Image: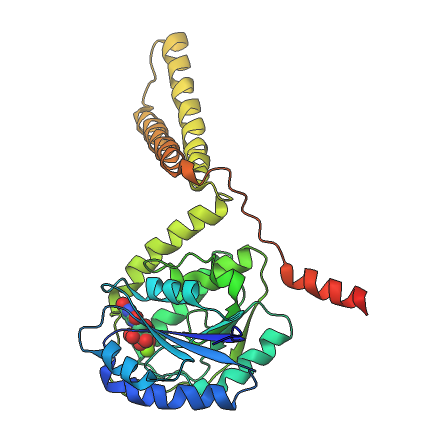
Length: 322
Ligand code: UDP
Ligand code: MG
């Protein structure tokens, strides 16, 4: 390929042999029929053990628009996405799940929103075809993310997305962090939007995430918040709460010490003693955690956490040229 393609479609894929042929036979025509001037498709094989990658390679054949990237083992969906983003040549990155619960033919809907100036466009499965359990956990997830300061989206975790490459390259993705792309992007000042997409039941294979996904997702959210709220200093979050607990804790203990010396006894204030001690000890624990995180993370320390809006810059230059 001489010219880099306009769009890179990244498909994380693990053990989806059964659906691979349909996936391939729909993705290529969908992109050909779309409004993108040129594209590439990156299938990132996340350590499949069912020869998904071999089959995909065979399907890609001589079509140089399609590539298979094989991870050495199963690293998880987030890392598969990350590998695809790093290898992508396009200036626009799209992602879609290999099970085709979303329709690649609807890519133009996302593109339209993107071209209107949204940096990250996420599909909104307004008629979701998943079980009740999934729908409830998803609704809870979206509420919690909004409550944590995320953008006002209905469905932040849809696998069908479109984004600016510079954003894709910087997002935290490992583990379950890929679930919070919208939260992080919005926090960095990128414009995040959504557009309705259709959805259907999984036709082949099976879901890779069980109902217990909510628990690690919650831990990932805490980790992400610590990073974002600490303004790039993850330890800041713990240090702040360490002070919030230890200062009143010290105050309570100082008050009791004062009583002990002036009146000779703290009377029946033992619950207060326990409370003050707990606050102070809890606070000290958090302070220690904060210091450790800052210390271990010192490689990152001081790296500025701003994100330049090159898009607006370019638009501005174009306007001036006119
Ligand atoms: N996937 C992956 N690695 C994993 C889990 C999932 O590459 O560890 C891929 C999977 O093949 C699919 C997409 O990520 O293309 C979404 O997975 P799945 O459909 O199982 O998730 P769900 O729709 O159930 O949330
Ligand atoms: Mg799925």
